[in-house]
Image (cartoon, rainbow over all chains, first blue to last red; front, side, top):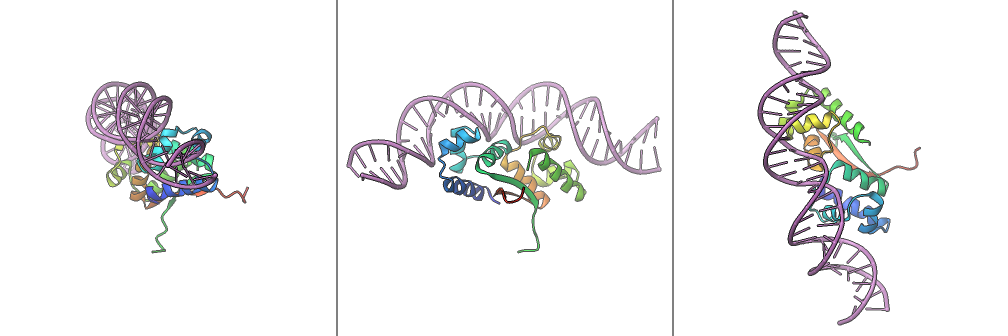
Length: 71
Length: 71
DNA sequence: CGTAATAGTGCGTTAAAATGCACTATTGAC
DNA sequence: GTCAATAGTGCATTTTAACGCACTATTACG
């Protein structure tokens, strides 16, 4: 998953839940400025930030071995 | 996936591939100090760091909606 | 035991993430 | 078009990730 995909997934999830950046910032405990920066593609968030956002959005970060059987 | 699990998964993968911290640092482009810090549970790595490690280990970071059907 | 390889830590520096505030840009409803 | 809600940006500050170096701790093997 490339960084840009990650952003799109999070934005899509946020939109689906009808949550604004401001609401998500409050819910997740991530600063609004940080969230704005991240969603606009400027950021390199820390694991902690990603997990906070995940918690608020009902999403989960996973780290798995790449499937090399599919091409 | 909690931070500690993430660490364990990465260490396990590294051990399975018989790669030392030093080798992984070189292969991934992540500083050795950074990797040591992370694996010893002291860190809060950035997305970029995690992706570098993932690339070197043949692993992938994903962000998905939590499955709430399972308990 | 010694010793070699590997992992973890203390200390310091540099670069950048996280943050708030104020502002501008965009979008959508009317 | 106006106006309101939301998103994005510029600037500054504080915190901390990333990093190297040197050291200590641990582990494995003879």
